[in-house]
Length: 280
Image (cartoon, rainbow, N blue to C red; front, side):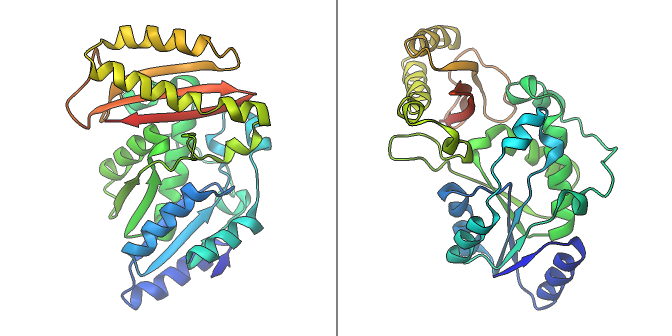
């Protein structure tokens, strides 16, 4: 496995491999890798000749400077995991390499920017869209892999790929969970031992909401019941709990057709913001 830090070198390396007819699978990350990320590497390994993983903590998608400062940076450990998983190239640029000057460009993703995550994180998806567009231009992959834990991000990037005609397949991959149901996240390591015991209640709330919707209850009724359930765990502070259409993430009054209902939440626990979702 080779670690590359400059745009010019990763472009040169990829072009050399493309001349040999090699297909490129790409997994963009911000590092602090866990088995959820490795599942994306495994999928890319199965479907492509070569796998590239980027590790870059993107400053333009953080609206809170403290979050950016606290974000874990574990490049050495990450590279050990990636090498064991069969990754071929790691692209790990500095912020100065990616942004010699701060980008003036901003991207408006329409309604997707103003619901759920976008409602509470001003400019977040413009920053995500900008850095992913740059990475797609730099790496030029055949396929790019993203976890569905960040469901809204996947929807935003699907729109980016379609509207800007990127010549690649965007592959959404299932959420990987701990044995107790907690969605794997680099943020989980910031939870105290006591908070970690409560954290599975996030997924339990989603499952309970799914069951209620299947029983025929309206979204309004379900949200009221879930709100009461969460109140029994005062450590959990819900930022949002939404029942939405899977494609456009707009609120829906009741369960959609099969595969088109998304229940999404962001909940603070122990000062850590946990996001999760269920699609059915």
